[in-house]
Image (cartoon, rainbow, N blue to C red):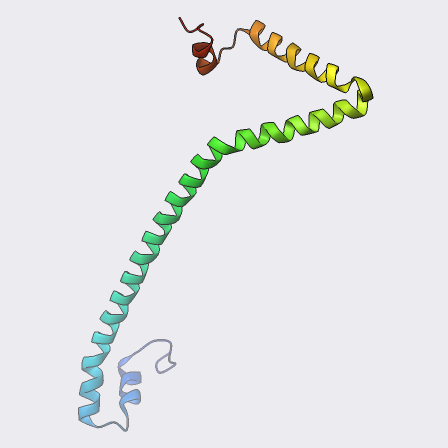
Length: 129
């Protein structure tokens, strides 16, 4: 549809230029491509900065992940120990402490019997040879 505003045709350009002087028409003719190029460069620069920001976010997320690998197991063990202690206290009352110690000893015994080793623990205990 010529002149609908959605697309430029020869007739719509002539209609838009109606009532302007030749000097203004030439200025618009020269400035339109310059504005288009400037807009494209502006978009390109903005995209580059967004990409750099996204790369920064990826590194930040990787850093957070590495930090959580080092600190989260400690937190998980602490919360699990609290929950287990509360459960044992509810079940065994005054005998909670000996039952808890017995469960820890049984856990270490079963771990030792399974043959699964932890390199750091084995090296500290001299079994890594």
